[in-house]
Length: 325
Ligand code: PEP
Ligand code: MG
Image 1 (cartoon, rainbow, N blue to C red):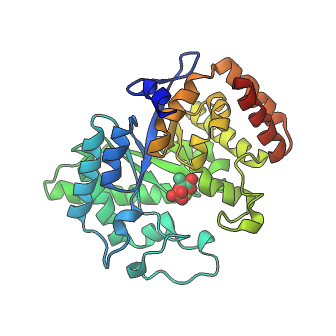
Image 2: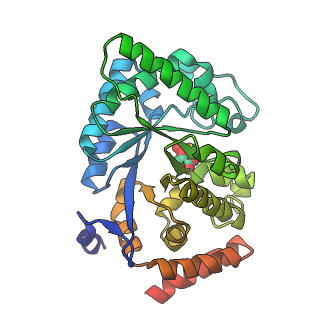
């Protein structure tokens, strides 16, 4: 299998009808960046920075973050590294941040909500990112966005950071590309509005599936609902891609669904530009892309979108696998 996948190493990611896509990697550390590059990823689509903050007694300072982001960018130079700002809360607890115990942490004070209220902590990260942006190809990505006010709040803080850095005579990228995770139904439903104020989208199907289906990703009893093949979830993904296309901004996916080979034709048909997957899935995803023309992918997606249940979707997609074998 590995031998056969190796023919895709160093190749472009291109569909059978010649559309060029990007296959990026999801990483959680600087070391991961190096191994993801070795795995032939064309960029990083999601650097989960919460791991920089975990297993320690205080938050990493600006210098430490700056160095980490520069190193990750260097491993991928000249290709982009999308760095997600601190996504704390939900299932990700960082003891020294003293977050309150909440009845419902997945719907609580987390990620960008927490960061906007903890300005100094957030500005430290934004300053490090803005500075690293002057040294390599870095993009900023905001997690758990639900409305425009959050994007504007982050941008206002970034503008403050730029003023400060300028006054201090430090190098930074004032035009750093800034995008959002689309991982809440609210963001997906207003994708056309949000697209006006950001440079890119990345669909986070792990959270989007849970919030869309109102089913906890860790609860076995509702696992049958936590399913990307649910028509509700597929429609959201399709509509977010469409909104991005209309606004002429790139749309990626960094949830697990990006690496699901059964979904590849649908994602091609929807117009997904970038697939961000775990490093070991890079070559398999590139291979899968190469097997589908736009025309065939659209026929599959049309059929999938006409089906009424996740089971039917799954069965239909499985039947294609058998045909291909
Ligand atoms: C997601 O929600 O799809 C995602 C990629 O983010 P995380 O898994 O880190 O919540
Ligand atoms: Mg998420």
